[in-house]
Amino acid sequence: MRKINIFDTTLRDGEQSAGVNLNLHEKLEIARQLERLGVDIIEAGFPAASKGDFQAVKQIAETIKGCSVTGLSRSVQSDIDAAWEALKGGAEPRLHLFIATSPIHMAHKLRMTPEQVIEAAVSAVKYAKRYFPIVQWSAEDACRSELPFLAEIISKVIEAGASVINIPDTVGYITPKEYGEIFTFLKNNVQNIEKVSLSAHCHDDLGMAVANSLAAIEHGATQIEGTINGIGERAGNAALEEIAVALYIRKDYYNATTRLNLQEIKRTSNLVSKLTGMVIPANKAVVGKNAFAHESGIHQDGVLKEKTTYEIISPELVGVQSNSMVLGKHSGRHALRNRVEELGYTLSEEEINKLFVRFKELADKKKDITDDDLVALIFEEKFDHFKEFYQLSSIQVQYGTNQIPTAVVVLTDGQGNEIQEAATGSGSVEALYNTLERCFQTDVTLLDYRIESVSGGRDALAQVFVKVRANEIETSGRGTAQDVLEASAKAYINAVNRVFMIEKMREENQKVAIR
Ligand code: KIV
Ligand code: ZN
Image (cartoon, rainbow, N blue to C red; front, top):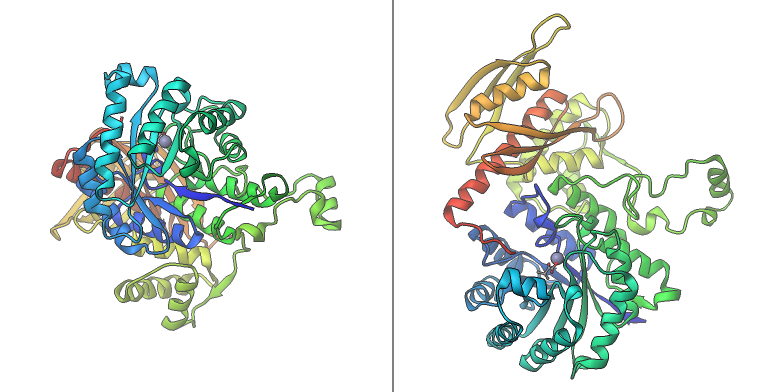
């Protein structure tokens, strides 16, 4: 079987999704989980974009040793230098260079002639080869490029030293048949094409990203780029979990395999969804809540008699487990640590100690602590602290059917000062959010509010996800507590803290627009 390399860009193209802003801890956790999943390459970010991106790429490159770590770079020396500084400590440093090749992009965005684009691409690859053993070159908007020009520029970058050639469908425009034909054309018209690896990178604007990626495999691609849950710019990128499972289930057809440990798919998908705040649609292939649910009587009857009547993918294949009860009131620190490790999280001694306190508090109120409860507590302990900004000290909310809802909130700021405010609203959550807005002294618009119970039962933990806009920044936040109002307050504070964090990073270094 042919081996297909999986290039994960959840932390770069995926992080370009509207409202997604991951902090360093969150990026590291996702990178660790991607390593466990078995991806071949992690695109950890765009090092020249900002200090924050640079630091994240550097830390990921220095931490992850089970796969190659790469970073994106425009075709300019300063970007390549920044990328080398960030990536040189990695196990297998590689650079992802790109430049646009379509007439629209060259004329209107780059304002360069095709000859100038070739010159910039070739000199960038040559410069990058001074540092990087592996240079991947991408023709941005390749699918709307003129094929003879694409073939010409690819021949020249291969000659300059590129060893992976990526053909992005940047705007999600191509169809599977046409995409396959581009690969065939390049194989027939580019000198030395057999010496490089061909890569597919598809966006999902017309809902064809996965189908296009699979078509590319049929026509010679040996690397597929995409993201977990298909997150990314606009309609997103190709969903890697769908491609990997399609290759596995239809190995009879594709005769191709990946290195992915499919049983890590569900956990990876959940982690990415929770940390990015991007919900997985219930009917999403492979990882959606309903992907393995059989609703109609005829289907249920069939599955009970013989699973394969209506089930082509078993939930176990992708690591879907029933929510097991693992710990309770009498479980000790040792059992907690073991379970945390089994769940795949890396916590410091201090974090374990804090988690243990939270766990005991919860176990006093809730009989069964499930894996999902534990993961919710781990998230609170590990990722949801923005110590330099605001933390919740206390809330008090008054509600009655014939009363005006009123909230009193006490927050602590990064310097340890207490801020106390009170306000009213037309409902409890509004009263709470009006009060918090007073504490922040910033106008905040609530764009979305979602509440979920972490596990079943009346005593379940509540998890609230919000999307907000403040100071022209859109971001998401989450909060967990047994009480829905406390969870709501935490989610709002978490989102607004992210706004302040982004503003701080922007002040330190203006973020450069990729496009
Ligand atoms: O979609 C795209 O063209 C990209 C490139 C930067 C590879 O993400
Ligand atoms: Zn892309």
